[in-house]
Length: 236
Image (cartoon, rainbow, N blue to C red; front, side, top):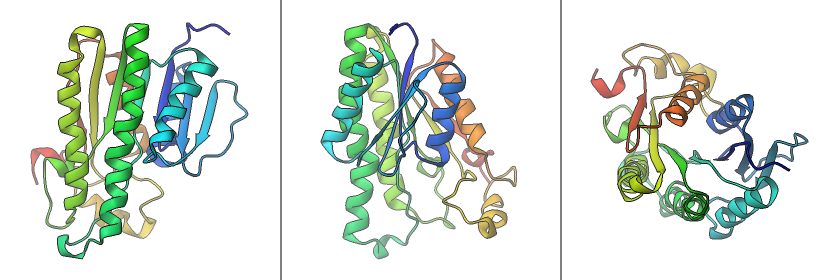
């Protein structure tokens, strides 16, 4: 099998943003490795699915190893897998804290380490994190300290990794969405959630996938946090 076709890994790929991002890469002619706890087997020869808990150190290692074994390379990693729990700070449980650290931070750490190693060996690559605009623009209507703690960590890590690997042909960026119309938001909540954006609508999965594709093509962009949030970061 030729190794010239580019390969993208997308975490949290079973539904929502991850599914849309994986589909965007497939539509562009990439081979894709998608992972999540509940992802189903794929009969597409260009799409390898791997079920696993991204917070488990073994999952990230297996995903990168199987990508290399099946497709021979890793060009892009999209760290999309994430948990969002809006709650009053004192109401968060210890289990919620552990779950968000595991998925949002540990999953990033374990998978990215192995992906960077593969990218260094092949001479370059691109890493994209999916964060949240709440990191930069807190909203009293959506108390979410643990999202800010974990996704804010990803934003900081994005800039740090971008500088660490800038001379080694590995770019590192992030997309920071507002509230996107995905299965995690019930239809009866859409109107209220849309009102939280200056544009007064929810984002679409395609808006985020398009932003990832822009960053994929933007060879002189690294360390960027691209906000796709209907103007939230700019103000009310």
